Length: 145
Image (cartoon, rainbow, N blue to C red; front, side, top):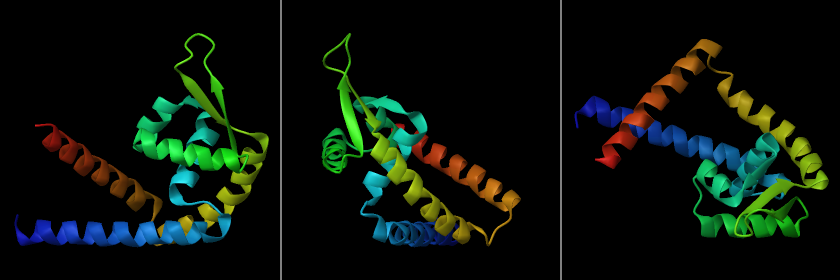
């Protein structure tokens, strides 16, 4: 790897670490950790998912997801339902309380994260998205060979 690629990789890792810390900071007073938040966000957006679909969407192992779902259930933020056609399949969705709490938390979180991206224009942000998608897809292809 040439020095310029190494520099790009280091910049990418540092940016990712800083963004990750910022996301965690924005969630500090919510009572949610990152996995709980992204789980609620997925369910808020998709409304109802099987646990398998949710795990695939979030890239979280099933065992970790089960733990997160149990915590969110104890907080009364989500509920589970068995599929009537296949008892092995389980659906999860936000409760009314979970939906209301997520909407309250999300607005503050969004404004905080949006303030980080305000240093770039919309066009620059779209370019970054496309570049990161390209790099991510190439890395995934390389991992599959």
